[in-house]
Image (cartoon, rainbow over all chains, first blue to last red; front, side):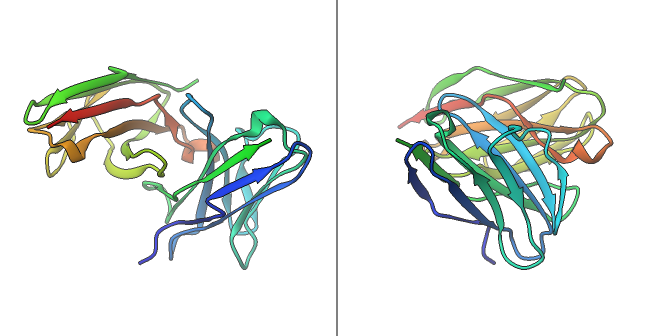
Length: 112
Length: 113
């Protein structure tokens, strides 16, 4: 039973480029969450999605960041016009409902 | 605002030397408290969920307990492979945002052989 899958595992972008991070939840899980771990900081919630719906985006920066979880395919976290402060590890988690969340291996974004 | 504080920040133990990690929390309407283990360069690995005061869960050398204000992760006779950062997180509230996890900053455990 495959766990949460994220790709790419490492992503390097120059300032001003776009970053696209993908997440495939565990089989049978319809709830997806994105968290960010900045260097020397803890994990911070960004957004919670179900299929075709954003349920809670209270942790998402107001500009440049967006997320989607389409009917078919993985969840996507998109960061437009990246800046150096966006460099971090981005983790996706999934759950079958109101239960524990299972995390993927993360995407490490480096902005040069 | 939900707050989670973990202590100590770092802990060094000799192999076999038992100890406890603390997680204190301030939330409105706790739905669950979660313990995770995170190894360097990897995602958090789920360990336990606790829902109500007095609840206890065990797995191998680890035992998690919960009171109304804090949780403890007891490590009995640790081995070097238990070295990792242990994260505590809470889920609270009754609205749609109740699903987000609020994490503490973690305890970095090092077990020396």
